[in-house]
Length: 466
Image (cartoon, rainbow, N blue to C red):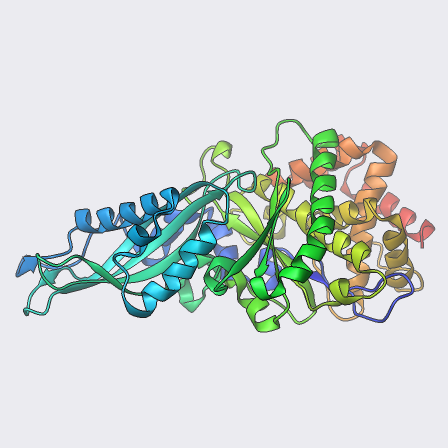
């Protein structure tokens, strides 16, 4: 979910665009399709060409050199070595350039507090038998299934493709090439590659009570400077939810943030798409073992990953950067808090998705709740003197209306919180994420007004505050 560049009060110019767009709106088409179908993790792979649980390919002729058992043992060995910290054991099957990249990957992964970290077979294709005397070779699509302590409420995954070769029964299997698994429909969005541990030869990690702030080590000094403000925002968001959020929600108590100043590298993170005005994004991470619907306890999303463009004005503004770094962090962490609550959408219709004005209004409400000066500044710049339709926005719109739509969405949640209490507003947001097709009922329970009555009252509130 992208977040735009912004201006500090009285500061230099900069366009305000959309903040945290819904997946289908920002163009993460494949991820939107997965959400529509209620598909996550292994179920997604099977739905888009993965087939049934895979076994090594090949026929009955020739000597079988790479059985399903051989491949599973290869993965289990890497999982165990990663957990125990045995680098030489982990690297043993890798050769050539693959070994070099896996060495830095291993060292980076060891810097992350995983509650779970293991490799799982998705699919194998190729020749597992030695038909012509030149050994066997298979392409193994493998999921790195992981759960970061306090960050993920369910295991999530990143998908790789390993090329495995074995020359003979007397030789050990070797992994000769590592890269991302191919994406469905030619897209890479849902494989969540590359993560920062893939990109950086030496990954810098600042660990605090509620945050892991990550960058390339060459940006360590800047990352260390920003990390306390990112941590403060995380603590604020978590305490807000604990104080006034519904008790029956399963939400994270920590967040991962990647700071990256190179735009091309930033845009590539997690395979997510970005737009030119984007300053930050919260990337939804599907639960690995989520299936086609089922019990709500399964949770469609296990968590989220936040990335921020460290070259943007929020980080480089000489006067206001502490305020602005906290603002974007408050916003993105608000998205990440409620991400596990989001239901499978079940269709492309608007009423089947969490309403855009709720998603963005909530995130901006949290950001400006902790900085009313910035909230007031946005109202003055985005609403005062601007054309206002009086209708709740269903998407960001285009051109000049974009900034207005984000700010009036913020005012919708603020109006609800001021008139009916913050706990009622957070219950409403939770219920809308879980049951997006029941907006009228949710508004009646939260405010005593149906959709049309609430819209009219909110429009009056917007006009009185601008």
